[in-house]
Image 1 (cartoon, rainbow, N blue to C red):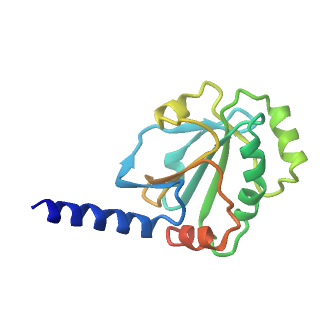
Image 2: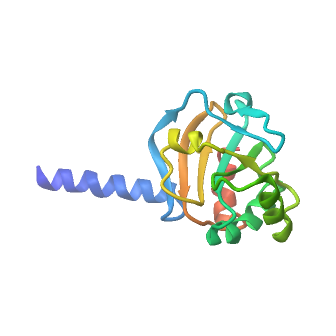
Length: 169
């Protein structure tokens, strides 16, 4: 019996490892449905995630003081215009209580051309999603269900990541 349990455990880990191209990508065992998820654009307009059903959504949480966020953001910017991902919506959401001006300066300094900054000023969205740190990217499928998270930095130009993400596009 112990051998059977060990075999099942090892098999499950092998399958999980095959689905996730990197150690810091956590694929949910069960899809997560979140209700009433919203954040704000630069004009303080409320954006509800439900408006994007039918799209593959990447919510990237960051802050201007976060060095790994600074390293990751240029590749995220290029992901937005990657032809393999023509049905993706990317929302870089600032959770650092940074001003719009500081966020715009952050994007300007990094030469970000394809993305706009969004905000979670009271960190309500981050709390609802139980974020543990930045950067974190929450991946939401076309049905509005969270299927995975990227905890920490990833190179969004890496062909392995792009190919993996394109399966959900």
